[in-house]
Length: 360
Image (cartoon, rainbow, N blue to C red; front, side):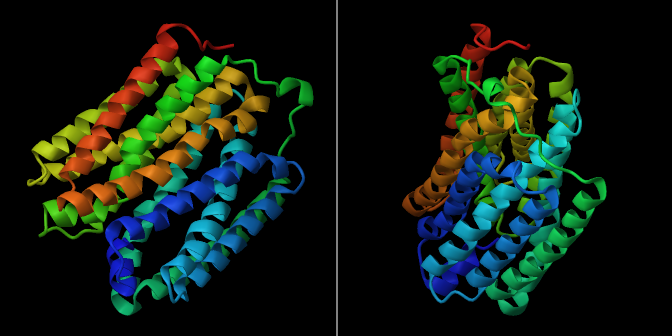
């Protein structure tokens, strides 16, 4: 939603503006990686209130920015890191509170994350139309402060606190090869999705100029929500190998279809499938890790695997923007995303076919 407004405001090419999103995902990833070190030291209410307060401060700074680097400081670094703190903690505290149903619990958290993306594009469009990017950031800051207060009150009501794992239980026992394959599978799957999600409005404007651009992010986020809920429940019931491979294969089919039917309304159907598969992927991986390695190991191991998402976030939106600047449209970027989905499918198939990972 912010690509064109930031391009216009700062007179920068799309690949440079796309770094705003990429850098935010990197900051989010670092926060998820190191966040577990703080989860057991503070109360749940304190963690969530701190996350929302920092996020609000970052968006306000971005809205007042006079240059793109200041937007990166406020939105990408501060907001991104706070986003990761809240998201990572939300996943783990929900799973701890629902032993035996970790997949469903994490799926609900991921779906709630997607719900924000369902509601926000239309509201951002109104704010941008009224007073530009700064107005959208102001509205987001207000929403974050309200969310923080509500979340803190809920956590105090149930006296929620993260349970620290015993040191002896947290040792990594999974082979390095399995870690690498798991990382590569996650990287390819989310990279394929993020190359499209980070440019959804721009892709629609390029392929279907007559459509309202903000509809694309809403379609993706809505299906993302459904995919998160579905994959969370499926991870509780079935071994994860076939599910993870199927999700990346589904992404590949949807992306190829968007190239073939991009000039028709079929592009929205393809976007919906991409959103569903992406939501399923980001819900299934943490749920699978919790079940494979135990809930007490989940936060630390998932933090390590989640660095794949951060790398994908850094590379994907920028790479899609670069291919757009180079070719003049998004077709080449979509084809590249489809190739990464195939790589993900292959990595997962190798990982589980050879029996490197099994349920406890």
